[in-house]
Length: 286
Ligand SMILES: *Cc1c(COP(=O)(O)O)cnc(C)c1O
Image (cartoon, rainbow, N blue to C red; front, side):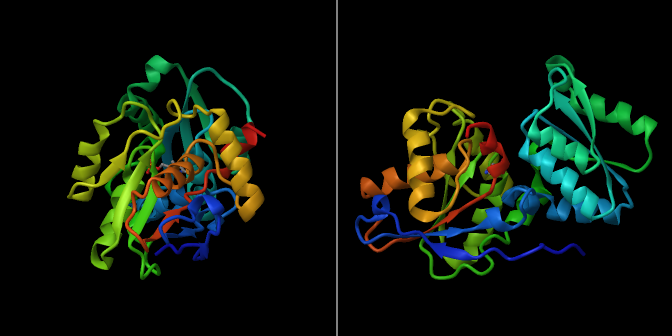
């Protein structure tokens, strides 16, 4: 059985922007799980790698864009647990710090056109014919086993009224909410994509029940930024010593500050925000 490398702490976040209505904000520092294996990507891989081990698979194959936190996580976690890793990367061949890390951890990168990338099963089957004991891992590591890994995020979180996290595919949110069920913690997500309301149904299917997702805090869409968001990242770093990434966690915390300001949360709420990591991605904006 695999183990988490480290159980990240829960910290009180004392920021003027959160001081309203006697609400208190805490952060689960999953960004500290590992310096490169982004918080929630590690959690999502936990049972997937375990399943691969049990099936005697030796070669993990996955998919992602050129700035995929998931691929870096897979490359590193694969190396730690004795797997070979390969990834189909969307678009023409490029180089950046994230792909360099993937290569450093021994991941075999195969660049494919956007057109070819659409058919992941076909790419995988071709690969599986030429290699032995391969194991398919979907883009972003999404899926049921991935959600299961995220049910443990709240293991040591007691006494909270709310938990929130950023939503890309919603797998993390689904697992988080499942883990919150027995603890009476209300779980909500902040979607970082624009116009993705349809996703709510998929998340409900994965979790087994409906979960509230806020869709008005994407700052213009996936990986888009604006001055307000970048200013918030600076403000947050300077007042807490904690870095946020511009794609996921900064949008979540900015949304949280706005929701608190408009008294969305009842008086005396105790909110736990999940820092899902992703900090490698921020090196491209500073
Ligand atoms: C991938 C990622 C997410 C989104 O997780 P999903 O399970 O796809 O919703 C959130 N935060 C960070 C830092 C990520 O890298």
